[in-house]
Length: 309
Ligand code: FDA
View (cartoon, rainbow, N blue to C red):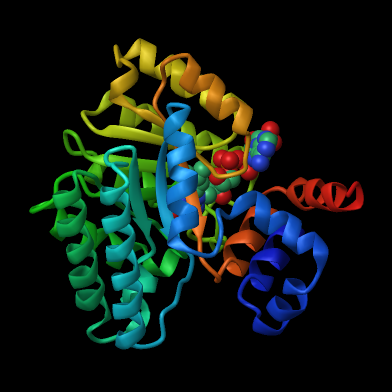
């Protein structure tokens, strides 16, 4: 837990970022977990996944945009990405995931309406391309505003996905509020660092809360998107699907690019819907330090790969 918190703090440290970026081990980790720097890399990765029957959700890396112009640039990058996905015939195999702070949420004052406007533009473009958008969930301070934005936009785009994090105590209430019929809800454990009062700090507590929310999702009319690499939780999701009479098209498993690829294919081979989170772009540092905070073995894996070259 101490290491995890230190790594999450490091994910926000700029000096450390440039130091880390220069080490060969980092290159190994980046290559494993990030599709590449350009949209064409992400589209290529999504096409490769579609070829083996796996769906994807593409994230342009970057968070905490500092001014409205930058939020506009990020939005345009996503619009170009959606055009490329359409041009490559990848809808509905590939959709996009967007961080609200990357499109303006953290700008204060008008930030929330700017983020809503920008995400609405992505929804319109995704809808025209025959695909969907999911709004990522970030640090706990952004949860209320993110859920407000999703709730408003769902009036026009009911397929807009949102994410709920089981490490937050409020999440079971949010599941109840957001699980409308057909609502696409990605349930994950949470990748940031909640405070003791608002979050569960122990692994087992987080896992138990995950199962409670999962059960609620499967029993509701919502469309559960089960985002975990945890073998126990994956097995529980399968059991809940069967006991609630849900077929393969009625929920999906989600994992990140580079994590448990054999398991992704195994589940897809059984007929399950599997979606992989495919990040691309130059701003990979915060994303990768969170992956290492979750599982320090991810760093050891890359170190071995570099040493054996
Ligand atoms: P956890 O990290 O607790 O690991 C449990 C067990 O799973 C391990 O003991 C191991 O057995 C197995 N395992 C985990 N990783 C593995 C690997 N790489 N290889 C092999 N085995 C592995 N978070 C957030 O806050 N907001 C968000 O919007 C999202 N979005 C998101 C999308 C998708 C598609 C995924 C998969 C995850 C997210 N997350 C996220 C991240 C999420 O909150 C969480 O931090 C990570 O998924 C890690 O938690 P796990 O549930 O995978 O298990």
